[in-house]
Image (cartoon, rainbow, N blue to C red; front, side, top):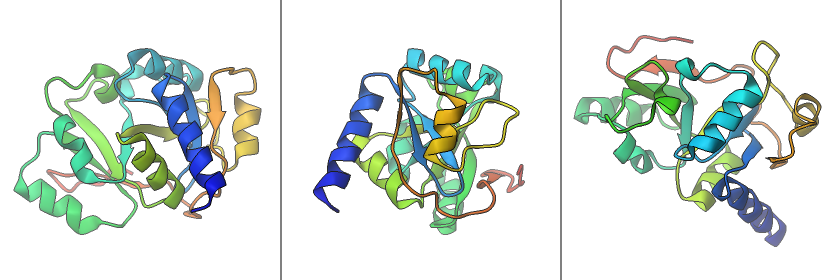
Length: 186
């Protein structure tokens, strides 16, 4: 990785650390993210997207075990989820009781994905913690496919940074599966 890339990732990680919102490329579209335990940042993100807190949010990570403290899973769930890697799948897994409602919404579960996108993966490594990941668009608008589309949607947002890069080329967002029942939601 080049010096410039390392520098950009450090800058992006610092934006997350100070409670700002970051737009970054994912497997299919640009995502909006923030520190999942920073309530103010999450509320800013939900307001920016015009998204209901009841829906819950996805956390991405580069390492499933970074999510241990968030999840209440057994060996069967672990085996199911790990066997799916490196597929682009979001899993719905029971959450620990302490996990804030701004992440779970009206559910007792949490949506998680071990990202397969190289830049998003490096971002998670640099931040050294899971990151909120939701499509970069106001609700009911198509997800942004580029940094330019993110800027067009959110041009008035002063605490939004963009980590430029190419999306992963997937035509559809990740499939979402319930890790207990195997049911596909999307």
